[in-house]
Length: 508
Image (cartoon, rainbow, N blue to C red):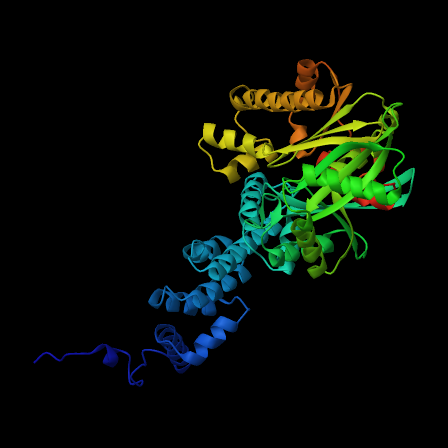
């Protein structure tokens, strides 16, 4: 009979070999245990994984497995995204957070957007300066910044968002912002120490009336931390339909008490709401010819509008020293930039183009004698771009700021917008001239962020047949330290005028 030989016989008399050596068996046991741990949730392990910030592969794998079994758990998503960011896996972290970005829960949505932003920042920090990927990532980050600015954030988050924006060269978050200016020096030798702005929380300003003082105060706290110095004092302004300014004529022979009574009587005729709801002030401008009458500037604002701003500043830790009229602050800044207008015997027009409003004011001998506000501004341009190119408002704003609009946008969108804007300005000039008896303006001063549109000054000059001035406070008073990315200070003119209240006389 043929003898059968096993492989073990062929190896001689040595002991039957093990499939794994003792050391290998130990390692295999550990691996099996790890895999088993990954498969079976453990409260202690889960808690440690969620709290961990090490970013190790095992923790990532464990959390990813847990998330597959419970995809609706936001704590697991946040924990996994944090681990992925710690490992520089920014794309994976962004994918993990994506289901939460549109969450109906506002807190979850805000938290996920913030963590998503951290993934962008992490990716940006890893790219070398000369990387060809930086332009595309920069564009994506600016888009995310504008989306972040639309959310409601605590003070520290607002500061971080604004600081990140400034670091990326972005100076306009959202269409409407709260701006601040600090100046140093003395009359005749002033210097712009700092400028800053934060997004106005959505829904907090309706017809220039504050609707949510608490949210605005949080933005003001953030703004305060962005400006230089530690001043606790502030000047603010009221504007809009709740503000009325009017030059009236009164007899020069009236005593102080008689003058106050006369102003009160005039106010009752001019102001369309009860006087007990109004904050009223006036200033004598000077003689009105040789007829024994003098010009008095009357300014009135709804007390509710004034107190709302004061309350917001108070909650932000600041003391309100002045509540001015926006047009007067604007005029003060223009006169500081163009002092020769102080003695102009012919009226000078001021056009301030903001995001959502156009302010027209008239100066005569250094005094604001007329002001009007209408709802037309830079947002109309963005809306036109968005409509024409089928973009969102955020995309249009970003493309406008970055200079990445289609090549034909000037013909298709910009020129029609300029024509409409010039028409609005012409109507304001006509309204002023017809109400004041003046035939024309000697000069027109452009201010505001919307005044920086290319070709606007030239078109206004040719259409209205007058000299157009476009002062830059940065060129006149110095560019704030660390603000190399800022090119023109037109949008800070009203804030500058408020800051100047400490250095110049005031109409009101």
